[in-house]
Length: 229
Ligand SMILES: NC(=O)c1ccc[n+]([C@@H]2O[C@H](COP(=O)([O-])OP(=O)(O)OC[C@H]3O[C@@H](n4cnc5c(N)ncnc54)[C@H](OP(=O)(O)O)[C@@H]3O)[C@@H](O)[C@H]2O)c1
Image (cartoon, rainbow, N blue to C red; front, side):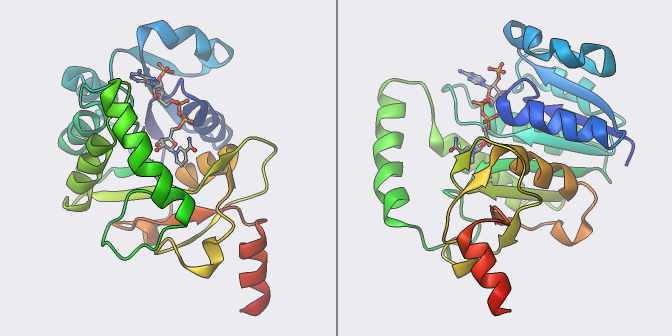
């Protein structure tokens, strides 16, 4: 892996992924909106920045050409099909053998076998309703983006993160196939480690066409699981 692209690089997850990727010696191109370029000033001399909206197919075509890997932050923000438009463009334009890693949350289910905590079951419909009402987010578009990825024969991974915390790294998160698996019960991951898992997935072929649900390796449920196995 030499050259990678990060789509959504100026966001909180994106900047952590950028730092991890530079630490690994990757040649990084990042896509971000024009109004967010200043957020990348600490790294601007060590990366290539392409400005534009991530659902602009020409922007993505330019950004992902010649990349060995693409890290895409899938967000439900706005109601302009950012998530599905971005995912489709990455699937269409990334080189055939590129590793494609996408971020989302536990609310995305690949096979309907996830068993969600009560808090998520109650919160999601409320958030979805108000997000659509006030047109600041469209969860169904993130669901559609993942449906397209899951049905693709590309070398994809969809990383499904638990609730996010800020703070120092606790190490590479552990993962399981389904939300509801005991190892995931603590439902917490540091954002910096979410990014670590995304970047590590680029070189982990066992994650190809998988949708790992992740949790901090230091979470109580992960430590309990480790002690029992
Ligand atoms: N929040 C949680 O508790 C949680 C839990 C599990 C998983 N996740 C996942 O974590 C990822 C988000 O990570 P994050 O922390 O980096 O989020 P973030 O800081 O909110 O930013 C994510 C991206 O969204 C862009 N963005 C923000 N507002 C926008 C708008 N109105 N229109 C278009 N683009 C907009 C940002 O671009 P700019 O820099 O240009 O603003 C950035 O590239 C998502 O995949 C989400 O599903 C989140």
